[in-house]
Image (tube, rainbow, N blue to C red; front, side, top):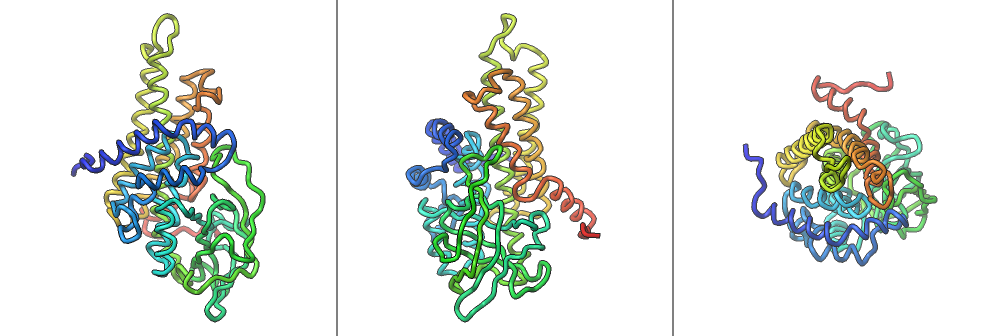
Length: 386
């Protein structure tokens, strides 16, 4: 069992690191201060360097590399901030992967190359006012009408809502109850009947738009069907890529905090000595490093096992839980070690703390992941309604 990266992977990782460390810190501050997403000009720069198409098929303009390579790039961006990394996350681990894997060939040929080129952002729209963790309760309906699909409903907590050009919308077909009725449809932003609510004001994730989406008799071509009723397991299988992406974003936030505080405690002096000379600081630093490396190993194992396929459900859930929990612990510990400077916005650590809490809520909460892990261990699902 070899845990080392290949030469090509190290080169890709280093290229992403150099770009992120040199070019993105000022952009991260701007995104966090204004709440505005990464601009089209910056997306074009991401695309020119290949960072939006690492694991997209070469036929669609991507590099055709394994998912692990994509997560290596994503971590380096997330070390700077969630805001600057989010477009990379959406392209490499999010709904673009669903469109490429399950979408009609004509749809995939239109959407994926545009995403790889930084000309289209795609968001996933799953949750609803009464269907988050209980996703199989969703009420947004879809029906076939000749050569079209008609959608009606309200979606909530859609990251990218109002800003992204395309949406993978989870919906219920033909009023079929439960998971068996759920599928997904691709909807372009400018389609008549699509409207967006006001932007949410979140604790963190600034620069990541979030809003309700209302669908009123929205008609899309039949070729926009991604998965029909009965295809819910396929959607959730692909969603494991996003879970690992979520874990990687959380890891990046923690790893960035660790790197920042490691430099700080060697420069900052108290009682005539660098902070790192105090044993209590050494112990805390070591604990943080252990947590970061443990999360990284779990993510890399799941990604390496998947190759260009799909991660195992339990491996993805475990990696997500680990990363979601340690990022909160590591960032708050780093803020404490930096004292007052950690609490000041100018130094960026408090942003890492704010961003760290979002990942354990998004993409399936920590607790529901643990329920799913337990279900996998005992070989049966647990009825949360009983």
